Length: 282
Image (tube, rainbow, N blue to C red):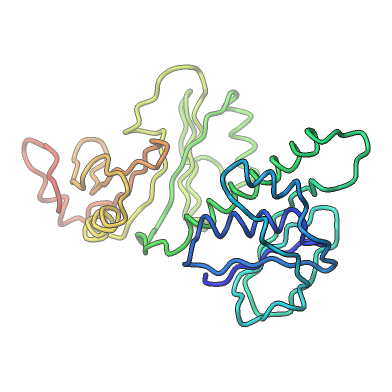
């Protein structure tokens, strides 16, 4: 992403704030522009809302979408909610973020309440831009063969019936506390867990998992995660207790645990050590 264009009808409030936020977030790495189908000048409340967070957009101007050089844009973000957004004819990736127009006329609002609406729109756009920025130049990740995940439910029987309908298959196995679905066409291993207040061990059921091709893929995922700066919860190892696996444990930014694993081949299983202690892999 090198050229970013924000569109709304008047290029007065939402798209102007978005342009200013993008300039602050991306700096020189991305060219940020904004435009509209009926440009009407930059709204003073947009300027005020942005000044509150240290961004000056007072020098920005409203522009017609027809004035934008298509060659300068590779991503277009429309911000209209109820209105019909301008059409940009260039060949670009398109995203739509429906943000309520803070400048919509409302005679019942005083100046402070009108400014509050601009703050809401500003913060919504800022949050979405933060995600867009985080998704730039994501390094290659591991190749997944299968996924498994789990959710907590209050009524295991009713939930098992619902997910049997939704996934098109019945649980492979269940106890009084969980039910396991295996959906080969979705590459999904899905577990329902009873939400009964009892603590679950993260190394057993309650986590998100990704199956890898083999031991080499688990080790490769470890190096990729390290290079990307992700948190390594447990370095890659071969475990023998329970289901023998080559496994790597990561933690996402909120501390949720992710297991990347590969099942052992028959040859690898034959090498099981007598003490069944984990064997570290690197």
